Image 1 (cartoon, rainbow, N blue to C red):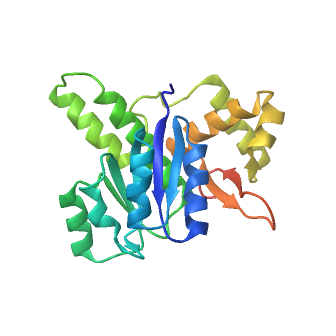
Image 2 (image 1 turned 120 degrees about the vertical axis):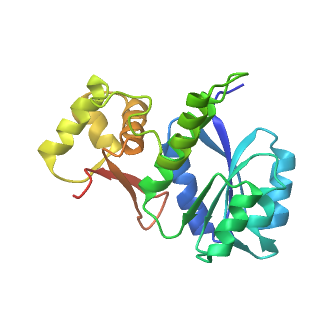
Length: 222
């Protein structure tokens, strides 16, 4: 049994699906349970993986619209597509989509929304809530977790990581941070994900000729 939030990625472009998978796996507390390239495949994935908590749905799929899946799937949903028609946004919201991200967007934007969703789930984990909790949960969904659950200064390790970026003035990978700070690579990735979610770092993907893309990090504006 795991406390990680399971994610279904629905996109008929395997390159985009792979990119979104990489971002999801980089955010602490999330794991990709399945990927699907059509409405039918999304339904099958949900049937095979009842532990899916969140679906990232493209709008235009070979056999239908991801928006139509929002009300159908037994999980929370984000629309992550290139459709800019205002009526599509209203339809998705009316159907129950918790977020609507228009492609292309920065990798950090999705990471921040995922972190906000995790906070939303934590705030609403109890049996009863008050108005403050409702407001905090909905704010986390919209804006991410910027300073909602974390101090402005962050942990001592994260302060050291930010100082490293300030000294280097360049892009760094998680392995670089792990080596320079003296922490394990998984620990470095966890703190980097926290800093991205807080808006203190940005993340993008670097593609090589083979293998999975690597996550690179930098200070905002660099």
